[in-house]
Amino acid sequence: MKQIYTLKELHEELIRQNQNKWDRIIKAEEMQFISSEYDIFLKIKNPFNIEVHLPLNSWAHQQLANKLQIPLKYYNRMLNKNKFKLLANNINTWLEDEPHKKYLIRVLDNKVRAILSDRYYYIENLDILYFLLEKLKSYDNVIIQECALTETRMYIKAVQKYNEIEIKKNDVVVPGLILQNSEVGASRLVIKPFLLRKICSNGLIGTFQFGKIHLGRRQEEGVIIWSERTHRLESDLIKSQIADIISQCFNQDLINKWVEAIRKSTEFKIDDRYLACEAIKLNFNLSEEEKQQLINHFVEEEANQWGLANGITRMAKNAKDYDRRVELEEIGNEIILTPPEKLEKWMEEAKKLVRR
Image (cartoon, rainbow, N blue to C red; front, side):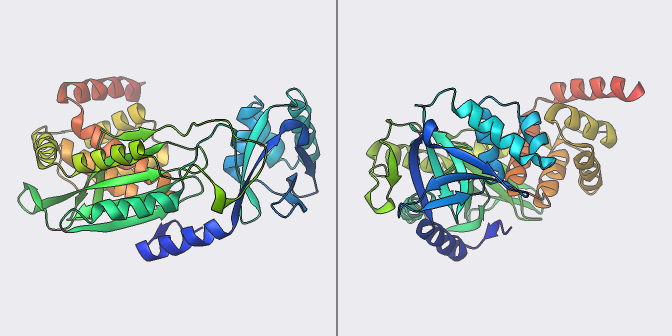
């Protein structure tokens, strides 16, 4: 599945999605899951009042298990072992437990992509894109550096193209922001500061953010028609908050403080690269494969805290999933901001475990 887009491609894809998605509020007693030899399906009526049988994507499966309090490990076991009849029976049985509970079913390309509370206040990706581009016009030399769209989130990175700041000789960063939004309940609307390292196009994601919880008034039952929805991005409060955090991301004083923290991280030398990577694995829950990748990248960087962080962000560029890439870019910044004495403590703890 394609995840990284140009701005033009993202715009075209979001328009296409808007033309091929629909929502419905429905009671549990009106939901029925049926099975076949190959999958399970939600039986539901579409906007034309025609009965359709819709498969679920992986995120909708996870949400359904959570909503019905079916242990995810057991749910996935039934799914992966092709026990579709058993799984459908489990789901239908627990839906009967609260027959009047309402759910928001979100459908894209004839597939259920989300099962949410009927109070879920959704902020559409296309609306966010338009508003972001409108606000960025007031900043000089800002360009869209990268866009991504996954099963659960949209990401947009923008940078100030000519605002180059030197960390050390021949090592320059460019400030910007990263916006992420989820139409399916995977996260809030979030905007964070972003730094692009020009030498290898690595990215760092900062710590302050604006988050909007997707929660609103309960909605009535029935199909939600896109052209008639009332909860678009018209809220002046939301727009104002988004504008404020954008301005913070491009605030030169805040950028300078962040850069100064990075410069200090170049002063902390790391003698044992392997031990440092083991410490990062333990404290940030990296997989063994990711740890090995980190070791390979760190040996190509300077043996200091900044080099360790860049090992993480270089690894992020090759992440199989863009959601994981963003997580790793956030970890890279956390490593930079970790006090050296804390990093030393992590390494000592890792050393004891390695000896065992």
